[in-house]
Length: 396
Ligand SMILES: Nc1ncnc2c1ncn2[C@@H]1O[C@H](COP(=O)(O)OP(=O)(O)OP(=O)(O)O)[C@@H](O)[C@H]1O
Ligand SMILES: [Mg+2]
Image 1 (cartoon, rainbow, N blue to C red):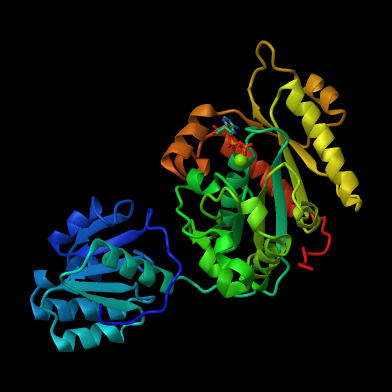
Image 2: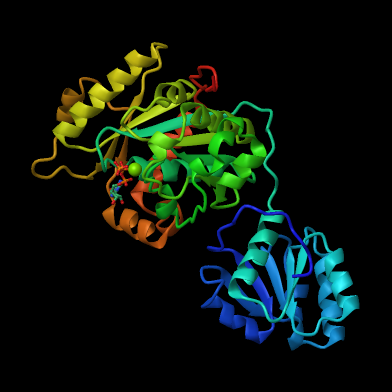
């Protein structure tokens, strides 16, 4: 590589739209760039490219005459915004290289190069072209979602809520989904994202986290949604301090319009302070008597421990359109809860399983699922209500 770049946070290649010029580059689809949406095209596709029509262009310089390459560079530099360019090849004329490096985001890889070098160059360019995280200055809103019992659907609902808010906002990087199941959170796997760091990697610097460090820790999922999740780390709950977690949340609230938390139900040193900074807390229950009893008790515990009058909302998940056999009716469910449920999400195993297996929100893979409609209703209702807000979480 000719240019020396500072380390950039790894960016997921999944779904990344790459326009590749040069038939030989087709092999990358099954190789180092697997997962990306790689289209082989020519100068014509380049000239017809709509603004924002692709995330990255790769050109194999060995496949074209110098005149064609010059025309390609001219077409790229005319694009607003110009997508990042990676030019690869064996014989790269100096004049061409100079023009490539004049582009806003571009790099050169001279053959021979390894798959790792190619992926690193692609990720570095993608990271460079992402809008930087900066304090929004506005009032962020923070919602926490937590399951009353294991497997109630908290992670599924958290992901759908975060996705729905990102789509509704239409802005770049408006939502940060934070997986607080630090040891073995499932958000990344459900979204098909690949975090590369763990919170403990920040070591003692964790409590001095700023927006640049946050940027290195989040994994972009879509235009509007970033995921803050670490790789599996069996010791995370012991190894990561309360101040570090609260500081991360504080910085996230400064940088994003929406911060959506997937909160483990067993209380940690930081749990109550994190919840106190939220303007909505959703306790997810399934429709079994033990889960409903747990949901009522868990919600009461949170309300009493916060002591601010903040009452979690109870969301009943996996509602069947008709109640069969042993499932309690809504009346029986509310009797077990000793209060009214605040919302319900329909059951749709096929949509939930298919989306988890494909990697991505249900709204993306099964947009017609009743789950998507119910989540939208819930999000519309909560987002339009004034924030029930306590002060943002503060590290000591
Ligand atoms: N509304 C739904 N309809 C059908 N299946 C669902 C629904 N919501 C969640 N599921 C499925 O239920 C299972 C558990 O969901 P999920 O992992 O979201 O639960 P959780 O509460 O986060 O679990 P954990 O306690 O392990 O964190 C998954 O297989 C998921 O696909
Ligand atoms: Mg979960």
